[in-house]
Length: 270
Length: 131
Image 1: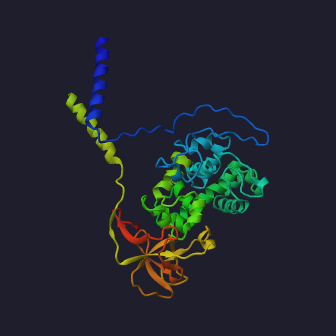
Image 2: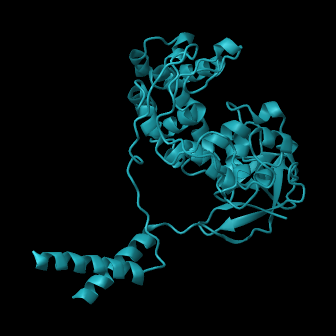
Image 3: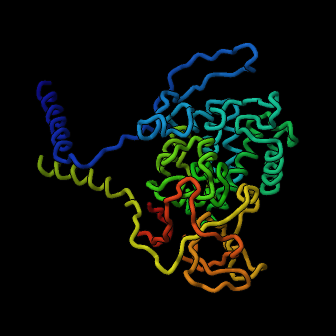
């Protein structure tokens, strides 16, 4: 027994020595699917339409440099996978399957819903806006993208109950239009020379336009966002949470903090 | 034996580190191309269904050759043909841009920035914005 203990101790010391003798090589520990979620109570509040608190990740609001001014948003940060957040919803797996049917990576789709709504089916029609749902799509965009999606894969029609506008209220159905929307951006970015567009790349595409999205996707991290998008005024940048002097790398980190590990997921699977 | 194990562990770490692709870096400025920017209206910029496209030849009916990025590498001193000027995409391929969409580079929110065309270690082209 004693001998076995010493043998283990010897192995431990060997590992310690090897770590000490290889000090310049960083070791990264990856936890598949992020850290386990802690149980969070679910409750309903009158007038909130069944709103539930986010069940993953939200811990801090700190920019990539540790300075809160550098952050693009006050949305809680997360280092976990957005796919876990989406799949925690009753409609999550169906949404992912619908995205896959269009050749879109469910992880990238999940990154979008996480940023837009924490993957909660938010209804905003009451405020006069048509933007609604887990993917926060306007009625016009939803209808346009749904038509494209069904044209590209008619088989999807069988899997949705309602191909009309009221499908906006069903997150799994809305996911079809949202996935097509992501695919459109990724295909355009690819045609521009961006090899493997990610969920993060499509964010700049839709926030600042296709040409700016391509410029940002190709820009080095140490360049300023203002220089990479020369036709965008500081006023517009500020409205999008970009402070003067903010670099492309800082912006990417801020968006990735919202999307979690899914930020760098390639959009296209085929 | 212990030394051999120690070496194996070290090389294991080194192997893992070497598996990561090296980040690309700038290998030089491309002097025969000039960085210019697109001048688009807000509606044109945010038209996701019809973003401006490079052309494969200097004619309106030529095939599209990919979405233009906001900055374009234009052949320095090239004479326009049919309202198009020779340019290069990120992959280094010859493409054509309508001159009516081009303007000198000037960043509204970063007015001291200057743009130059560069080549990267992965063989692709891009832009650096110096101050």
